[in-house]
Length: 359
Image (cartoon, rainbow, N blue to C red):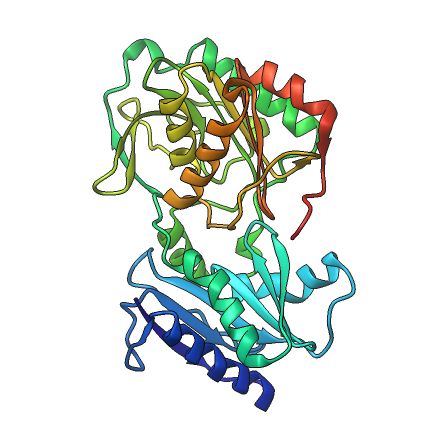
């Protein structure tokens, strides 16, 4: 595992903690790569919002953490998000580490997860940050797609399952549980926008996804970065996942010929694992909401990683009724299984909390 630092600290304290973080990374088994190297596993981008510059990855597997400093500890969750969330886009980072008085570090994720790690000294704090950061930085992304124009002609215009998927997506829109795609184009110049689209293979950042089983092996799923309340065209807005290429880490999609497909949701690997393990599961909903009393994952792995998918699938396995389960993704949201999408939404809707608790 190799790492590098880029950027410039905004204060002596900021630099001192960056130095402690480097020492902690090496204690955890990371090796520091030469300056200028970009074929690395982890990048620590040390900067303020004004000076942050994006690191241009050669590989999707490179994990970038933006380390900045706040003069004061945010009083509320909203204050913390406002202070750190723009750094995610500014630095094209996977996560933001905000150093605050205490000492403490506030983690902010793309899914709006926001949690704090504290310690009595910078050295101990650095070790605790690395303990949280290492599994995230070494996780395996499964966000590539292989498109095969082999969708049966009778499915080119969809079927009863795509109709249900579109109907439930529209219902979620009325509940205001699926925000519109994040306006990333307002925060990036044209060059950086093209880069982030190549990097993540998305047309925007949109919250939540839904899928429904087609047959024993295949399932229909919402595309990435689309308004889930307007799922219309099979092969573009709704995609048929037909296989998982584990060796190359990519989802296989059957699409109609002549249609320029979107990419499937990055959580397709999670849905794949659940469907394969539990034939009784007919549909899956993932929402950025919460339900009291549910069990949640321990580590906030990035969306689209095998590790997050495995964590969620293990929780489903442990439920008394995996076919009608609700489990939590820490600092993120919920995944619910059911007989159909309509049945799943009807069952969980009375219990939904819009605010995801942060830990």
